Image 1: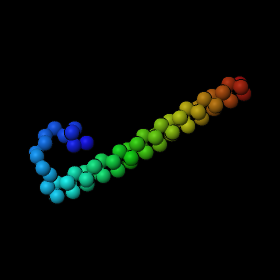
Image 2: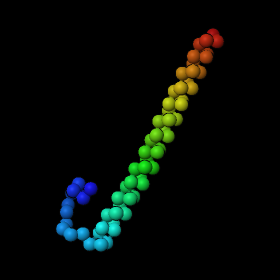
Image 3: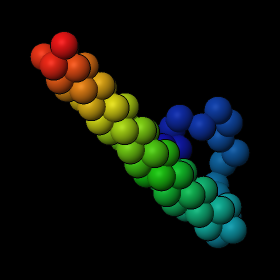
Image 4: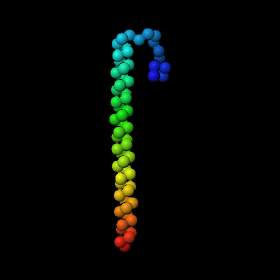
Length: 63
């Protein structure tokens, strides 16, 4: 992770290390939250498509 940072400023102080760890934890939590939102959204879309497809099939069959 540290190698990907644009600027390195030598040795990290304890406060800098603490901030870095907090930032990592925050980014991980945010990524998990966003991933969950995306998966839920995709699931809803697939359910809608599935319901539309079978609903349309039933209507054609009854016509």
